[in-house]
Length: 442
Image 1 (cartoon, rainbow, N blue to C red):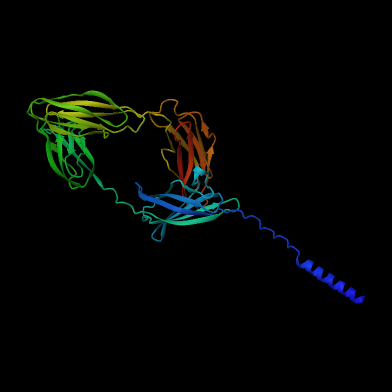
Image 2 (image 1 turned 180 degrees about the vertical axis):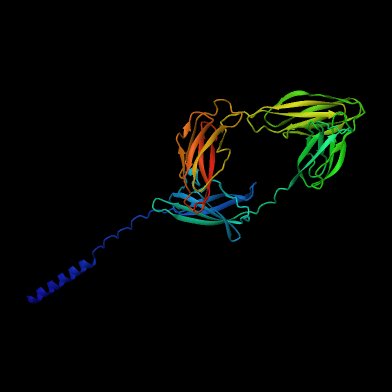
C-alpha cells in the first residue's frame, strides 16, 4: 500500500510539471506610435547679382525647400551670408519667405521661396562669389531646427560702357544759328543717334560711346554738311551750312494726323518729287516709331513700324520730312492699352523698396492708380503685414488714391532684415507689394 501511494504522488508531480512547461506565453506589448518630425533640405539655390546704379550690389536669391520627414514644416526665417572667397561681405535675414503657402512646406513636398533681395551698399566690398544659406524651421513638436546649403553666384558681366556727350552749333554763313536742324551719326557704334537744334541752333547729342564716326548736319533750305568726330577727344562739333540754290519740292502722301492701334504694326508713306533734284531726310521725335529709311534722293515708299503701347495713356509722335526749300509733318497718335483691371503703385515717398534705420519708425505709403485707369476700375483696397511691421488702422478703404500708415519695430539683431513685405490687395488686378529692408541693430 505505501508503495502504491508513492507511485501516484510521483505521477501527479510529473503532470503538474508538464502543465507548467506547456503554458502559452503572453503577447508582447507593441511600442507607442512615433510622431513624424519635419526634415527640410535646400534642394536648389538660384542666386544672381547685379550692380547698383549708386554703387554696391544687389543679390537676388530663390531657394527650393524639400520636406522628407512626413510632417509639415513651419519656415521661420532664412539667413543668407554672402562671401567673396572666404570673406563675408554681407549677411541678411528674411522673414515670411514662402507667403504663398503661409510660410510652410507641406509634408513630403517642395516649395520655392519668394525672391530674396539683399542689398550691399558698401562700395568698398568685392562682388560675392558664394552664398551660405541657413533655413530655420520647426513643426508641431519642435522649433529652431536648421538646414544649411551653399550656392555659387555667377560672375558679373562686363560693366556698361562709359558714354559721352557732344555739343555744337549749326549756323549759316552769317554765323546765325539754324533752329530745328538735324544732327545725326552716319556710321560706327553710334550709328543712328540723332538730335535737333534748339531755337539758337545749339544741340547736345548724348549717350555716345568712345570712337571715331561720321556726322551729318542738315536743315530745310541748306545743303547738308558732314565731318568726322572722335569722342571723347573732341567734345564739340560745329557746322556751317550753305543755303541751297536748287529749287526742289516733294509731295508727301500722308500729313496731318493718323491714329494707330495700341498693338504693334506698320504703315506706309509715299514721297514723290515734283520738282528739282534735291535729297530728302526723315526724322522722328519718339523711339517707338522706327523708319526703314531715313534719307534718300527722289521719290520712294517708306514703311514705318510702331511698337506696342505698354501704358494706359495714349501717346503722340511726329515724323518730319525735310528737303531743300520745304518740309512736311505727320503726327502719329497711338491708342492707349485698354485697362481691364486695376494697376497701382505702392510707394513711400516714391520709394519701393524702402530702407529703414535699425531703430524702426512710422511711415505712410501712397496707393496711386497708374495714369489712364478708367474711373471706378480702381476701387476697394486692403493692406496686410506681419511682425515686425504693424499696419496703422484703417488697413482698408473703399477708393483710391489712398494712404496706408505703418510702423516698423526696432531691429534687435546684428543682421540686416531684408525683404519684409506689406501686401496690398485691390478689388481687381494683381495688387502690389511694398518691400521693406532694415539696417542691422546693435
